[in-house]
Amino acid sequence: RIQILFEGATMSSNIRSRQIEALKRMLNLNSPKTDNAWKVLIFDEYGRDIIAPLLSVQDLRECGVTLNLLITDNRDPISDVPAIYFVMPTKENINRISSDCKDNLYEKFYINFITAVTRQLLEDLAQSTIESDTVHKIGKIFDQHLSFCSLEQTLLSVPPYDAKLCSYHALNRCDAKDADIELCINTITECLFSVFVSLKQLPVIRCPKGNAAEIVAEKLEKKMRDARRDPKSELFKDQTVTSFQRPLLVILDRNLDICSTMHHTWTYQALIHDIYKLYLNRCQVEVDGKTKNYDLGNDDKFWVKNKGKPFPEVADAVHQELESCRASEEEIKRLKDVMGDDATNTNDKLASTVSSLPELMEKKKRVDMHINIATSLSESIKSRSLDKFYEIEEKIMTKSTLEESVLDVIRNPDIGSPIDKLRLFIIYYLSASELPESELQVYLDTLQEVGCDTSCIQYLSKLKQFSSTQTLVQNNLNYNQSSYSSMSNMFKYVKQSSKFMMEGVKNLVVGNRKLPVTRIVDLLSELKQSSETADYLTLDPKIFRKDNNFIPPPKSAYNEVYVFMVGGGSYVEYQNLMSYAENHADKKITYVSNEMMDSKNFLEQLCKLGAQ
Image (cartoon, rainbow, N blue to C red; front, side, top):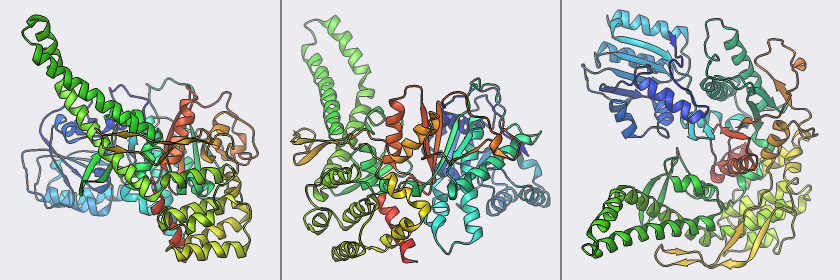
């Protein structure tokens, strides 16, 4: 058994870049040297989801991978080519690898386990290969510790295949068995452990008391401490790490802030996830009656620049990009028309312009994609009056005066879907310190009349009753009330060339208020004193002493922060944290969760809990 080391490689401080480097090294047969010899890549669902956001088919080909298949597929033998396995260490996968060896499917087997393989499974593999006389087929075996998905440079998640195992519903359902909860906690712990093994750093851990976040934090601290104590382990040793400051890991529970997951959003990325659902940076959009699949990755400069901006600004930016493409096309046509008048000079310009055609065509393709997405978003916004829901919810959470009562909005048949109205009421309900039972019943009856499943309110009502969850209400009252603004003029933006029809959609300005998670990150990373975080635990895997009361306080603020939201994250929170980081140039924040939830998915989980 060999644990992978970062030998001979210049390691990036960016977690996404580190994971890409680790995967490419794995595809080079775990050597720092490039090996472009032909090879086959075999993965399970976990491995597939980890690789998908990071390496394209072209990237795999550059590493010599000519074929990639699921381990469960019926595969034909390719006896003169080595195979790289990237799988979870499960009994089923061990049996399948043993079977592949017995059938002589490949020349050599390079087995890479996503997490650490147990001794028992290794012995099972050894026994089966001895029995089939195929021990010589096994090239090497590695523990990669890569059990996380790098969706963006600052956005990570548990691999989607595991999302249901550690969902909000799985953690909070009353009939959950101890084994189910243990599996859920282990899955989250393994994800965080893999992140910091990749970074080769041990964080200082902060978390609230008395919920799932504390359980995860304590289990992670023990796992890290045990790895550091092991004299044979090299997991947290990295000569390239020169910074004396350690990262801060803040582990929070989803119950800290339910409202953010229900909130109708107004920024580009969050809108796409809310309406279409982003899955491994991909979305499906209806265009002219046809479903199109779009990749929204880090290689798309327009996406990287504009994903966190308000939607009307993105619409304007798309039009400007389109005009830029058209200007380049017109310049090529003009140069063709004037050829001959000043042949030398014109030909040079034309040659330079033509050489940039591939880049121009790729840019035009990206612009067309964003035009289609933005046009479809605009139609959804207007058909469901999403701008109005966003505006009302902002006013509720900032305690501003409402022009129309929440009850009247729910009763209005011309705006929103039943889910939109239920989301609005949940925000109103959680933001109100008290709501008389008789008044609550009126709301519930009205919601049921418009087709809403109100069983989720039963669960949220119980949640509010517990004294330990009273911060649920308080967190939604602590918004900066002066940060919300709305332009009174309607955003009348008609661009014939790009098919945009934004007339009738309000140009709402996204406020700069801190959501609860951002406020807590600010308090903990800047070492500010507050009653909100006074009882937060501090855990340090570097300290062998069991009593963490002896942990010395840090001498300076933390510049590198990782935030894990147990129970599911949201793009609203993620973008709020990124906005905070942009305003603090020395601060780098990475958001991690067991899944990036959309409001519909979260409502379904709440309704299941309420129905129990």
